[in-house]
Length: 168
Image 1 (spheres, rainbow, N blue to C red):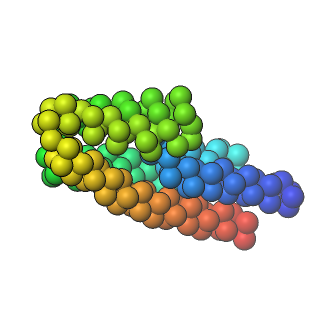
Image 2: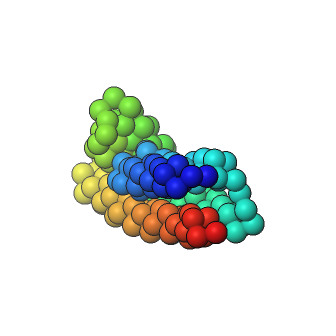
């Protein structure tokens, strides 16, 4: 591959990965998957070597871990505060609909709002509903930090791969 083509490949892959990384701010946005897809396309364009295969497997494992961490941390904190599964479902629906109809930040409002309304309807207690909603938001913060750290690690591993390809 010529020098400018290789540099373009690295630039565009990194650009897409950074979009995925900063897209992690939006809860419904699959930033880890975007980073993973960018690494996959990079591997297909630049051909997988042994190191590339190993690093891509690690990137894949991290992508799956990031998706699981997101769901576990958000739901677990809200559940710890007393949220019902039904309310968590409505919170998910609120996040999804908010993101679809009021992008990019509608999900940030929709999820806690529907969770709050569902818990208030269930418990008839403003205090309890607020406690559960606060739990969701705290879990959201922790999940963002976990996903962002995992995204950075995915990009770092790809960087090792890209650097080894360019120095070969």
